[in-house]
Image (tube, rainbow, N blue to C red; front, side, top):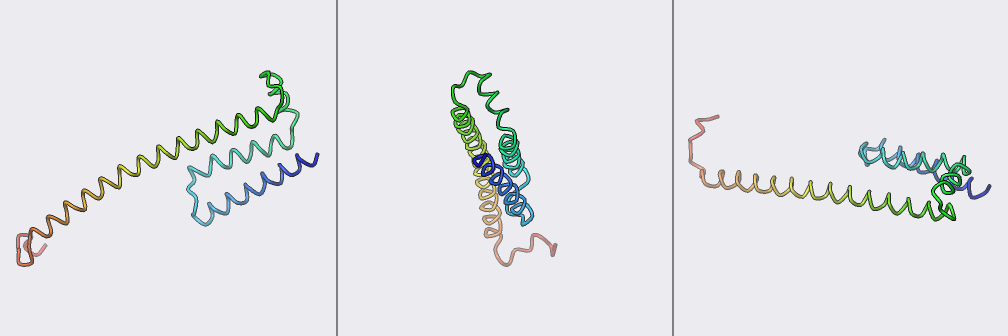
Length: 121
């Protein structure tokens, strides 16, 4: 019973931590959903551990902890892929913005200080 109590308390602590990060605006909602879901699943299985044991038995896994480690590894790989995708997308946006800023700077420098082509606009 003690490991289940520790797992339940850890899940509640993660809930509180994620909600605090959301409240302070440190974490965006689209990322918080994943972590809140995972904390909810952990809390559910800490309250009803026999369900996880039944799932492991149904899948033919000899020890439920092996299933837990496997699922944790899969989730971490999926999160890493998601973050790599987000990082690549943001790098492309930053590069495009840097190019636009360079073009605008070149236009401003090529006008010169006495250019009146904007007619006071």
